[in-house]
Length: 264
Image (cartoon, rainbow, N blue to C red):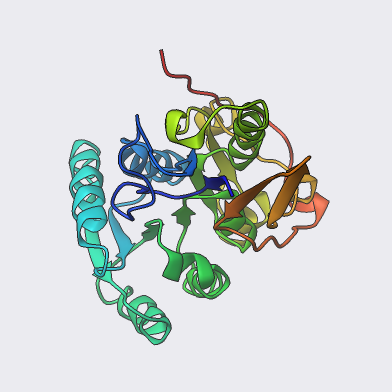
């Protein structure tokens, strides 16, 4: 059965495909990885909270290559902004609360959450701890924003779902997954949670409100679920890594502008 995946950061490293250009086998799809996202999160968090000076970067050291790349990228961006980024290693759930408890003594005044399954599964706990410690936090997806983060920056979930439909259409018309290159994201969103900004006593700068930001109502988002399509004798499965959606009240957020970046 042909398989179209979504939200797989490293399909080659995870051995889903032989290469991005030539997947091979009976599987292809869309990755949610793109270079430069870690740096952008540093820049956007500083733009939203100009007073920031020391930022914690939550990382899971079990994913060594991903951590190395993102730490280097984040620290390079932070240096230009005269920020200090401190990686904080978290391997399991019961290490999250102690990490936040340590932040006041380290004079941490902001948090960046690196994309990782551990942090996604515990996004609610992270958001609650960040709010209780009054720490502005930026994450990587709509779903983690909905859990209660201040902001997120990452690939558009809606764009990925729509592109998955195009892949399904091609396969149903006879193309082979092995011949369909894995697609990297081209549409990115900066999302800001107005309710959390107000709870933290933040006034959003005009440069953020008038720029490439979305302060929108997540209740409009389609819930992420596993689905399958059938056409004649052909079945296609779509694997979606992120399945959890929690809606925020419509009064929490308001629409501003959509940010799209396209490859040329």
